[in-house]
Image (cartoon, rainbow over all chains, first blue to last red; front, side, top):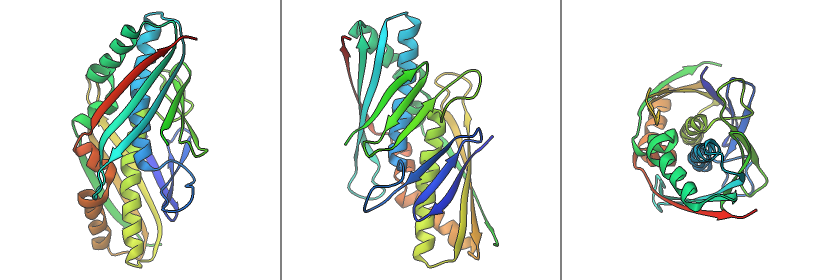
Length: 135
Length: 135
């Protein structure tokens, strides 16, 4: 089932996954937006994908992982389209985990498993259709 | 302020934007996950960015936009890392909007303004740090 994005007002949208989950997206020049902005979602998508791989790999090795966080930020170009020139991720594993296992899991995710970073590294074809409905 | 991703359980994480908003991410092989998966977020990020540009451009032209939706889906490669080989977006504008204005706005977003698709087309440097905390 396709995802659906619906305009609410201003630069506020709701995303619907077709399985009962909704998410507010908003960009604002002033004040606090009502939800995540698209560029934040891009960071969350990349970090979430790698984090899921890393936790999954450490768990498969039966390592005693007690916590896991990722801190993430991006550096943007000054000129439009203000793309990310750099994405920075700090992965923190909590527990008696050898650093080498953590780094090996991160490497495996980056090179082999993470679908999001693989898509960012190798851009997909973008197919865009448009239509106008009177109403 | 950096975004933060925190592992909850299994392949479930919470993202925090540092401004009071949280979002559940989850991947599951069986059953309904508790939130969006990273690859879905990537689609939402790309569509949200373009949708905000398009609405913004149509509004600046003072066109009578009454509604706007995007339907989005991706085609994935069969092999790991199962990247998107194609992303498909259907933009629907509701109201008395000339189709040519809609298409011009989409083109401007794609070529000039959309930070997310510009990042996907021109991969940023990924800087990854890792650390282990006993606990």
